[in-house]
Amino acid sequence: MSGRREPLIDLELIARELDPQLPIVGQLGMQTVEVGWGRCLARLPDRVDLLRPGGTISGPAMMALADYAMWIAVMAAIGRVEMAVTTNLNINFLRKPQPGALLGDCRLLKVGKRLAYGEVSIYGEGGNPTAPAAHVTSTYSIPPRE
Image (cartoon, rainbow, N blue to C red; front, side, top):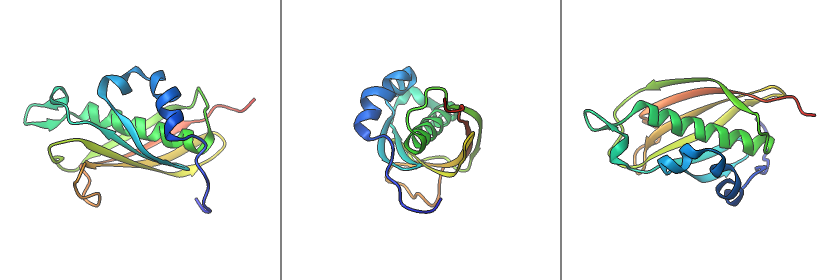
């Protein structure tokens, strides 16, 4: 996506209006750290109740982080569209993440009239973003504008 654009939402709006719409965001303690047009850096805090046997973060928790980051990135690109929804999410678990909080770094690769497609790299906070624990691709359906 060419050109530099401003995001259509900001951190304050996300915390005040978007996060409360998804109870799982508060339940898991996720938050948006940075937002840009078609970009989002989201954080999942270190929580013992999200660990699976073997001491690593559970797959469903990583999927939730990826979907949240993608949702915010889509909203940053198209604005608040209530019925923009996930139509596909594919995750590849690449390595055990470092102990601690996780970051989900999302960037949209294509934003069309009806679909948005992006990728999320998940890595440990303070870890190496070029060696992610998981790589996610996702598609969002954008409803027709009235």
